[in-house]
Image (cartoon, rainbow, N blue to C red; front, side, top):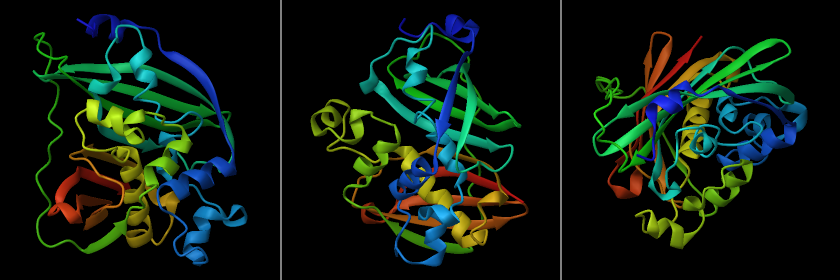
Length: 285
């Protein structure tokens, strides 16, 4: 079996050092659609170095990009084809605001392996700390088609009851045709998002947008709409990737206010509101 669950779970954590600069932060923000309109004071907080704050979802690309997907496939006990891999979900916990420039130590390991029958799910956990202490913890759920069925633990259900009532706020965000090409410059080089031939091998009609790009666009919409643009209020952010997004489409982002959190649902407008992100929660102060 290409996935040896016992070996993967027993492997020693992999450590390394990452660094990032304000330029990396600005490039990430542009990759998730910031800077429109370019002279809007609220957008300049994402694009101008003298006013720069860091959207917490930058943690998913800081230093190397997509820490739980590509690098997770090279850990002991994991030997799968990239074309079978999809990003199933993402959970981010913030321990304090992310600085615009930094150097930090990462510790990555496989925290869980689940048998979903027709697929396996790997949970890749990355913990990041700098000289002042912990910064963030990332959990990436990696969905590997065709690698389940060995009789392992199915794992917890990530499905939540849908929020009740009409959303408190609804916004739409257009995706540029070149959005995936720009976003991948932050470090996620999976050809699924750029190469039409590879996308067809993986079962898609054309390259799809990175799930983590949609993840970042959604968090930015919540911060700008519900949190008065204050990135420091975000405490944690989790989602399940429920469907694909194609460059050029429009995201419809519905938000429900709750005590200390926001429930969010994201869909693709042009495909009859096909679900994109589900079971999404932003916890905040």
